[in-house]
Image (cartoon, rainbow, N blue to C red):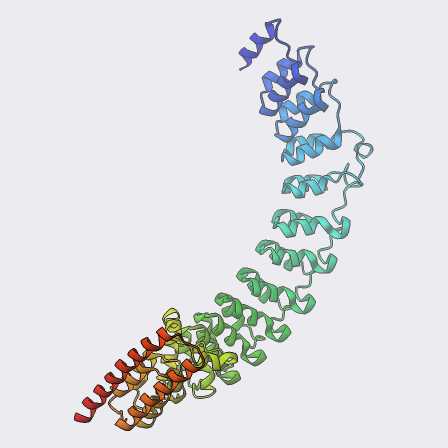
Length: 493
């Protein structure tokens, strides 16, 4: 490249200073030392062109030799703050070191408008930070504790471990400033090494604001940070009614739960066993298992709230885990458990009774499994679930419960009466096929009369069209014929 530039400079048509000395600026930016030296030897070239951008770009790109050439050129205007800032941003230790030997620096820098330490921290240059703090020339101009120790706060927030370590060695720096903000920022940023350094310093208080740090670490799932804090005797993880373990359980951080359970101050049963209830509600199997194995935890608290929550969300495995615990009794508040499992809205129960829940069960099969698990528990009573299944026209559940020996003749007969009033022939047909069915011809006749009465009421109320009337009568007649045939077969047996 040098040969080409030399050849071009010999051509009288070529002006190396054209376009504000672009050639020099490009060579300085790209680190072409020999080309810069050659261009500087040409009297037509102005190294201070475009606001001394040649030396500035050399600093920004860390080209020390080019910087030295330009710095020594008397035509270059030395703008100390601008050059030092560019060198810091470029991470050029050598250029910064050279600039710090500039005579009378104190006269060249206004601390109110120029803070080289802040720039070095912003650009994450720990070696330059150390160099600046060690500079005798800059010492009166640089204060690492300025603005309530803002440099340390920046470094801690961004996880600049080496810079934090350097700043902590400076006697002017106070890591407790602004209510332990440095430690707070390091925890929120999940900066393990920074937190470790600050805790080793012993000046920051990790228990401030009622142990906010351990609560935040557990709520955010920062395991390594939580472990560091738990190892500090000043930290109380049981603060705020054991908020740390309650938050971890709600968010599903099982590894943090392990650490918390091993701490002597932690009580996982606080706030009426909220931890296990939250874990069950969110579907965190591992946490529910751990808490069930802890003798301090009562999984049946609040009238089996954990079981109710798991049932409501359709968490089959959690329901099974809870039912294996002898303290959990599905017969306590059982109707609430099953209603949640069936997703029946109690506020709209009357309306819901007239809706077909079959499609909802198909969409939420896990909820069906939950109800099945609970209902097949020998401690639970199937009677009310039977009634719900009949009211909601849930054929699948009726089939399931017909195989339960606890459903007897009385249940079947009452169910037949309910189904007939609703005109639910599918349920009636199913009931007539049951082994324990004790339904007479009189019962079937009554159901036929009830069905036609319901049809007449709907016609009178104009709830159905005439086409629907004829279609409904035809369907009803077919269903009634089928019911009578089934009953005849039953009587022959």
